[in-house]
Length: 361
Ligand SMILES: Nc1nc2c(ncn2[C@@H]2O[C@H](COP(=O)(O)OP(=O)(O)O)[C@@H](O)[C@H]2O)c(=O)[nH]1
Ligand SMILES: [Mg+2]
Ligand SMILES: [Zn+2]
Image 1 (tube, helix red, strand yellow):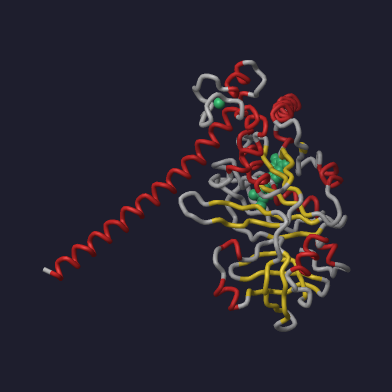
Image 2: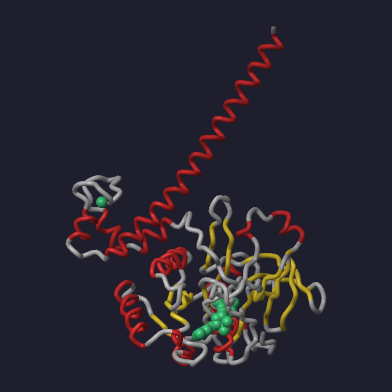
């Protein structure tokens, strides 16, 4: 963590969007700071005066409605000084973009990080390599308004031929997305990655545990600041080490957020993300004969027609159907839950009625 003082809030990524909201909300008498790390129940915030340990005010804690209301790494917050080292967080300024994670089963959303310009979706070329997973992450970044880029790491462990094959596959499937190929061992691709990072912009690295996110950020910083995981001999993967989500400031002025591994990507309420992501399929679907077409077996289905004619990529189609099925499933179980609740309250009502009648008897 670089603790050098910064000259302006812009160096921390502050810009017009946040400033105008600050004024709109009449909060411009407060100091603002950016949340740069999250610990259990506390935060680290930074502004031109330095870094502080921060807590949210008791009132805010009491009023917080959901986890989304709590500050997250990347947030701009209004603060008041408690003492030289500590401050209180009052308000979280409206977020420009965010990465959310839905927990399957629980009706809860976790904000992973906010106000990010670009997310590097990192996969390593070994067992982790999976084109469909890229698509799952794209649904999440699209949902949060963040531009995704693909980063294929550990290219030192495969042959040139194998790498060419993978890069062709990726380009074919995701023709409109930037691709980076790196190795933190040979340093291949690292300077190209560095050059892509712009002053004042915020980047985050997403991907499974052990793909090399922290190693990459250490390379970008130029020092081994973040602890990386040792590959377990047994599983061939990095061991799980819990780290805190934290923001780092690079010498060229860009800002980078490291993320502890996200084991699985929750895929519930991202329908909108999915529909936007599959623009091509959504456009075709509008021309299907039946309005509730599932694009699996119906006659007069434009999606299937395009698929058969080779105008639609098969992998993309299959992933679309898979994601749709998953989100439909979550919706269905929500409905079922409500249905159950309804039955239960009816049962209670009848039971009370019976009791009442018995009283009269
Ligand atoms: N062969 C190879 N190993 C790497 C590379 N980058 C990272 N690793 C190793 O992969 C393991 C996990 O790295 P880490 O950065 O902790 O992954 P993270 O969980 O995504 O942050 C460590 O043992 C790293 O040394 C790479 O480019 N090539
Ligand atoms: Mg890590
Ligand atoms: Zn159809």
